[in-house]
Structures are given as structure tokens and as C-alpha cells.
Amino acid sequence: MLLNEIMSNNKKFVDEFEVEKLSHLPQKKLVIVTCMDTRLVGFLEPALGIGRGDAKIIKNAGNNVICSDVIRSVAAAIFALGAEEVMLVGHTDCGMANSDSEKLKNSMIDRGIKEKDINEVNLKEWIGAIEDEESNVLKGVEKIKNHPLIPNDLPVHGLIINPNDGSLKILVKGY
Image 1: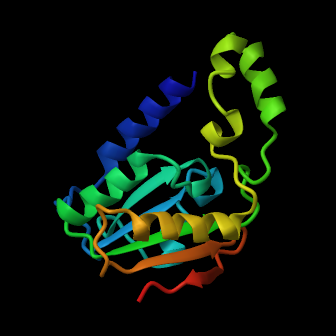
Image 2 (image 1 turned 30 degrees about the vertical axis):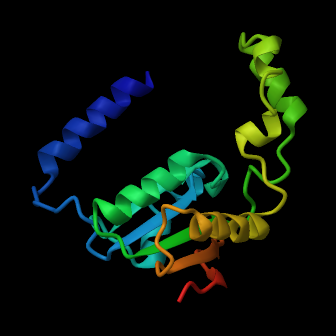
Image 3 (image 1 turned 135 degrees about the vertical axis):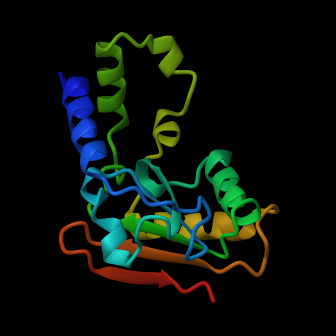
């Protein structure tokens, strides 16, 4: 059972961990919006030179800025936690690029979701399907920059990371 394995790993971690007191405030005054892709776990931060306590990191499918929750979290990082810059970091080979809505719908139905409930949403939009990774980052940067609750002077950067080698490409330099 996965939960038992996780609890066993946690006990070992806690037993061996040297306690350190860190602030909940991002030390580099940075908020990052990125993808939940498993290849970025334990990889994105060192590729950016970000350590524990340095940045607030918001993850979702496709690093998508399609809902108010992302903007709300960015705003909380700015106004309540002192973030002064935002990075929207997409990645190559994203699973949300050109995702198959019909396949997703069939999978949902197979798992017991009612078709009438699925049909109440635009599934492609709801799941956060994107046309391509770079245009998604560019659109996301614009949504963050142009939101009325985000300060005009806030640098919002757009980057793409390669999940295989960690190389970065700047799409938008927000300064």
C-alpha cells in the first residue's frame, strides 16, 4: 500500500532530519507558477537555483492561468508574503498540450463519472488543455500582468524548462 510506504518513509525522514527554523516568507521574494509534471519534482528548484524557503511555488496541470485560484495565490504571495517577482515556468513535452478531450471523457465515464455531468463543462477548457507550451506561457504572463489585482510594476517573467536536461529558455523578461 502506497500510504504505508509513505508513512514509513516519513518516519525515517523525521528521525534523520536536522530541524531548521525557516520563515514562511519567500526569502528570494519570488512566486513561481509551474506545472505539476512529475519530472519537475525535485528538479525544477535546483535547475533555478531555488532552495527550501526561497520561493512560493504554485503547481497545476499545464502551469495554466485559467482560473482565479492561480491569481489569488499569486496575489497572496505578493500582498501577504512579500513576493516581488513572478515566474511562470512551463516545460517542453507537456501532457496538457493537445490533450485528447474524448479520451479524457471516456476515462471519466469508465471511472463512474456521469456523462451528463461531464457535458456541463467545456472539458478541454476545464482540464486546462493547451495548444502549445510557449504560447501558454505567453498567455499566462499576460493574464497575470493584466489582472486588476496585480500591481503594474511587478516583474512577471515567462520561461520554458526542458524536463530532461534542465535548460531554460526565457520567453518574457518582465523587467
